[in-house]
Length: 192
Image (cartoon, rainbow, N blue to C red; front, top):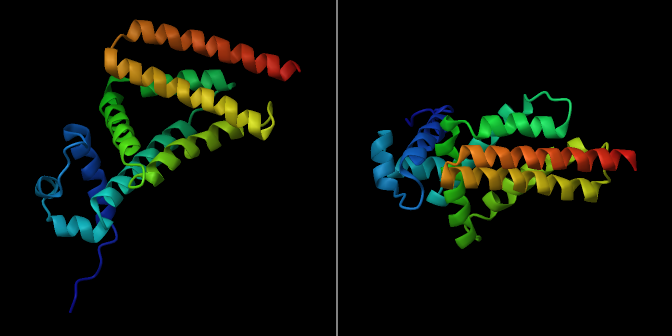
């Protein structure tokens, strides 16, 4: 008789894989050392995820969901103020390893777009949809997506700079200037 399927196991594995990837990175990831660190076999990982690339895609989707749940709880009177709160969360020292993993993955996905098509699509579209929805009261759909692109690129660009330089003072100042500009843009759009 076969064992009953443990429905919790893939979720537990994903969480453990996230911790492993945040510590060791993705570029040199091999299933054998990963499985050993998790106390399982490469075969177990393949059983639950299908392939190394699918495992990575599942893990990154879980990270995005976690991050989105955190940002969904942000209650702010305006988009710039929401961005300020999100920036404080993103740029907290305990978030750096997560964003280093994100940027590493992004680079790898750009080199191997056929393998990581879902990651490249979802990492943009998930966020554009959320941000653009908040802008719909001010802009038409196409314009809302364009402004959402500015917001997404801004936050990611500032985070990339912070991870690379650790020049918090300069980057935080740049974020404030950007938010002031964003607030002016939104005020001008509302008055049209």
